[in-house]
Length: 51
Image (cartoon, rainbow, N blue to C red; front, side, top):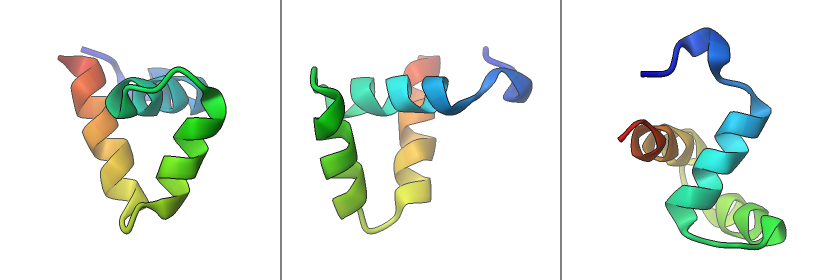
């Protein structure tokens, strides 16, 4: 399990990329910017990363 101190921008971005199942970096931001609750999106992505 990842420690809170190990979570940074890069980890969050990689988690979102895996969560959205996209290859292009720009796609991550397009999807993320359309989300109703961006904090929830990050939380869900980190959960997936931790599995």
